Length: 270
Image (cartoon, rainbow, N blue to C red; front, side, top):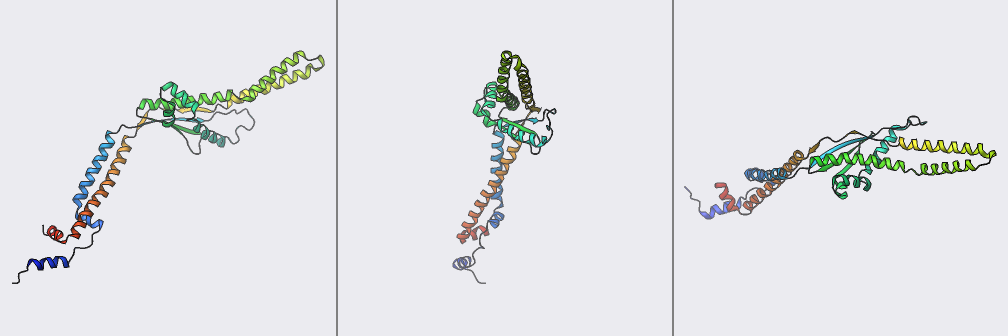
């Protein structure tokens, strides 16, 4: 019976090196390291999600839907016009004028109102959403509703400030004064001018009323929390990080054993 000497054993170990290291093989051989890394990282992600203060989002829906149907051709192109108006009004929600009004009623700074309130038009419809986020659910609801009301007041004020109405009213007053001083031969022409300007001014005012198109169709009554979605995102990130970390640790361990054949043989025997 031949007895193998230590030198022969070392020679055979060196002559037959372990197979090349791959990440997948390293993970399979050291699955317990990968499992530990995944459990630790997922636990950290879940803890961070649960300890984080959730953000609440409240949504208010407004629509552009009122129109003066007595105007000729008012209904033609109604859908396209209201969709365009909804897009335009949604961009006005974060304007200084609207944000200042909300700030005055809530005590929140104008900058914070603008950064926590957004508006998005719903495609192919005259409806747009106003969303407000806040760590407090009641505050989110208040900001969403107040932003909608402030927008309605702002657009109504713009309608009242129509320069055409101001100009027509001034011309109407001037025509009334001229009619009183007109000669009897020009009285009829002056009366016709007064009547025409009066009708033009009335039509201008009525058109301004008709342009107040925004209506609240669904005020914000509750706010949804992002805790569940945040928990899922954080735990998924923890899972990915754990897999990567476990793979790195397993690969480094197998690489060390591959470089040091004596250690690899010892690990195989054990």
